[in-house]
Length: 426
Image 1: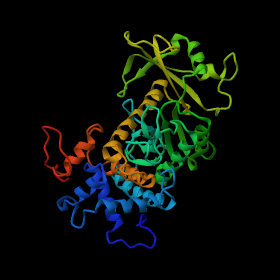
Image 2: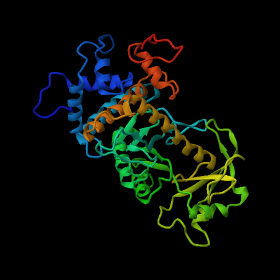
Image 3: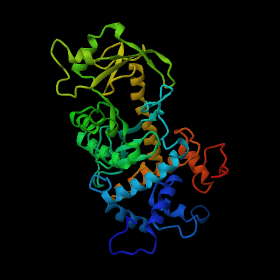
Image 4: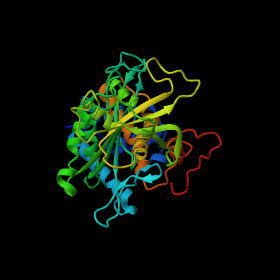
């Protein structure tokens, strides 16, 4: 077992212990004593469970030895996770001719045409986002103030939307930047290593907010070898938040009204009072020169606007009638409305953050940075099991509670009016 300390032969198998800990987090555990209490229920966890909180702490120490100072796994642990993930994804794709489930965009599957008469292949989607975990006191190591005026940590995560499981989680102090390029590059590299080779040839990377930076976009551009090597290369497209700064606002002011077209809803219907337009030409060929000089030649900037309600007062310096947003992409073709809808599916990662918090990530259990990073890895793993299982998927908003009800009434309280009887076959 990769987490076992060198020269130490524990009486309790570490693989079993960590598996039980992840199962306990799925069942509602939020601290070390919860893990001990839940795993003692032999009817649910089998004989030999019930590791004490001190034993769980030792296992966290052993796991922390395989994590870097940033909380990312070392090569040995990452390879082990990748091998397990490859076997799990084989089960996910077994009923779909070896293909991952396709992500839906505006009611259509996100795919690319096959070669010749071949069937369209789903695009593997990697989504990167950060979240805030609050801390009780600044005395805890690696705790710092964050942009929401509290104290805690600011981990950066990556997820695969096709399967819903986590790919990487980086532990960072609360004052870590939301758009720190070096952190994004590390997480992206760690996420790519977790995707089985047969699903890496056609990727979409999305990052929300004003996350566009030269380092991140240049890194993704280097990943994209499709043009040079064709089928032997890797096609990597990105959809990354772009700042609505003075440069972007200047372009927006010069857009003619007929350049705007209606946005689409999640099911592909036009949205009133919301529009989208391509700003690339005005930025590339403005009277001030090329305002996108230094960026890759295939980069496009697409802007959107939403009419403000009559009761909303615009912040100082912003347009009184419209709220504007923008994103950058290297996708050459495709309708603007569809590319905009594709970018907005990034919002689904917020559901993953809620699940991460519900699976033990709401609070970190110790004052030790290594143990906390190990606990966060287990919490992220706890989000994954039901996602890679060939089981019906309820809505993400209610999934944790439904998953816990499958464990029976001993795991965690069920919502009022719900049944605590496990579903048939669970």
